[in-house]
Structure formats: C-alpha cells, structure tokens
Image (cartoon, rainbow, N blue to C red; front, top):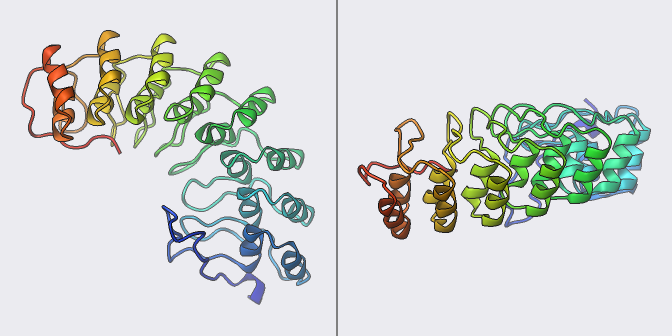
Length: 306
C-alpha cells in the first residue's frame, strides 16, 4: 500500500469533545488534510498516482476525505476532491453511514450542500444503520432552517423512514430543540404522529417532552399529536413518562389536560409515570400525578429516557 493510503490515528478535535475519536478509528493523510482544510497538502498528496481519493472510512467516526471536508465547510477542498473523482454518495463510518450531503446538512453548510447536489448527490438517500440520517433529517437535527426549506423545495421526502436504531424523522429530529424548524416542518406536511423507530427512538412529542421544550410540545399537541403514543421497544417511553422522568411538570400538566393516561405503562418493566418521576426524585411531579389519579407503587422504577 502506498504511504498516502496508510491509515493513522486521528488526533482529537478538542480536549473537551464529547465524543472522542475511538482508538479503532484510522484516517488517511488525505482524509486528515481534508478535515484540516489544508488544500496545499491535498494537492501534493494527489500527485501520487496511488493516492485513493475514495479510501473508505474506518471505525466508528471515520469519514471519507470528501465527508471530512464537508463537515467543516471547506468548499475549495470539496470542489477539488469532486474534480478528481470523489464519490459524492459514499457511506460514512459505522456511526450512521452518513454520506457527504447529510454531513454538510447537519453542520449547516448550505453552499457545501449545493456543491454536492450539483455533482449528483442523492437528496433522498435512505437513513441507514445506527443513528443514520437523510439529508433533511440531518438538517432538522441541527435546526438549520435555510437548509430544511431548500431541501424540501427541491424534493426531499419530509416523512422519510428513520434509521432502524436511534433514527428519527425530520420532525422528530427538530422537536427536541428547534421550534422554528418544527413550525416549518408541520406547515410543509410533516406527520406529527409518525411512529418512532424500534430501538432508541421517539415520537416528535416524546422528544419535546424529554428535552423540556414546552412551546414545541404545545405546537405538536395543537397539531394533533397523540399524547399516548407508545415509545420504542427498547429505551422508549410515552410522552408523559418522558416529561415526568425529567421533571418537566408544566409539560406533564399539558399532557394530562390533553388526555395523557396517568397510569399508562412503558418499558419492559411496565413502569408508570409515577415510578418514572419517583425514581428521578421529582417530588412535585409525584404529587401532581397523585392528585390527578395516579395509583400504584412509587418504587421499582428505572430510568427510561436516554
């Protein structure tokens, strides 16, 4: 193998980064240069006829050279790599297999996204594997309104199927933190009651309740969101469980006022909202639930929401 195609440890982006690059991850010199924005080094590396512009990502957080450039919006490098044959629809590392378009979308790089589209990037490439995202789902994850609007206007599927594990629809992605994105997606026809994925998923309302976004929860309820929709088979909860476990009493009140069942169960242990609130120590929520008909034991609960 040519020296330019040897995988080496990638240094961390920062000492405080939440998700450090795992030891198993290896990056080629070209991938590292693309990530670091070093166009001169890229030009030098590409002089070697054995330099593989499409060297596959290795490990959990690996990226192709093109994906690495897209993550940080190095547009001159994106153009250069595409000009020498970079695969615009190549899959990323094991954490989501996200292609370049989804990478650009989640980081809010509209110009980069348009460059990729002009070179044939698939706008509706399905979300794959663990934590996968379509381009629109990725944009919604980041709350990037201009990109969300642009993708919808050129044909992005607003209700595309989420990844099987830790996947989300565009609306579910936006509902944990981005009210303006939620408003836009509902206006454009997003399904407020789209089912969550089987493992570690949530409905849009469950996402809003878990994160404590009362304004988003109100929007979703007013748009017809089911307050009693079931959660994921694994690591799932109802909206009321999510609100109670996280101590969001105002959201719990909203849900109960709109028909949420105070004695519903969730998880493999058939836990009640009362148990969810009790195990997390939210005494005010426990009191409110009891005042509104909650019965049964307070002990025996486990944390349901990741």
